Length: 442
Image 1 (cartoon, helix red, strand yellow):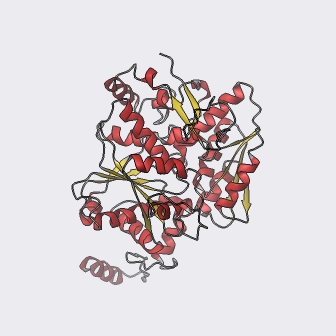
Image 2 (cartoon, rainbow, N blue to C red):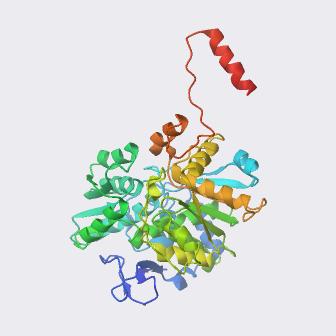
């Protein structure tokens, strides 16, 4: 069976383009484009056959199906030649059973999907493997692409730089100067990307990269490009697969530029249409209160929407005031009976620290999701018997300064209720024993 995908306007104009066309908006209405699939061809396999195939490919080394993304190649981009796939065998990240945390907050069936346990330390690898593979295919077919470019708050730049380096494709990164952690800044530098630190915020960088990529030889790598969404949608499929094809009741996800929310919904809806699942989870989007345009729109029932000027937040990866995938995200939330919640700096920092005390090592964006979860549980929105999966978008090691600042009680607008600084002692056994005894008594 030959499978096929194409680009189509998300607003329903019906305009179609090849996935190899350098185009990011509908030429009729200006809406974003989505990758659509020949679903009738995919229905040639039964749901059980798809499950068996995906299970068989899990953890295989057969190229490129060992990847959590390319193991579902027929559902992602079937027409890319295997030789042009650029993969780090991304995906297959574990679901951590946060049993102690779940028991403490009243939701024992609580899981954290560790998307940060990936090649560059974030879920962005899932989408970047697809986008860079398509660019490699385009180059093989003679398309004149000189470079791939993105605006980024950190994680996108790391993923683009690594995958572009592996494919020997020049990468151009636009970052807001002084607003990205050192650990994130050094990743694209190390991978030999051209890193441009601009005197603006993410939204300013995004405005420039949109103009820059009007030159068709510089290819846009932000989630405005629907190819990224196709890779990221596999996170929802993988979650269900990890629970033996059972759907959780809730998925809680941090929300910034909103491509991840859109992708999560696409994967779930595809499973439902092809019969692998018979119900959808509810989705909760979590935003930092200092960058919360989706939350403010949610309060109006999505009747009103205004971008905001994002204020400083520890959750730098979602410090975005004008998300490009707003329309996509709203469609998903409406289809999934979704909710949106926000978290203050104090709430997100303490939620992250609380999770760390039970064995996690959470990034501040995951802290936003966990803080939102606590609010939803306290309000009775999430029931004690619900299975809840929180998507952790990045590895905590990328945000070491956030961790240090918390435990040294130096974060602005945060009362560090779970701070655990080191205890300075003389090199004396008695002093050590006293400190141990005092700690174990507390």
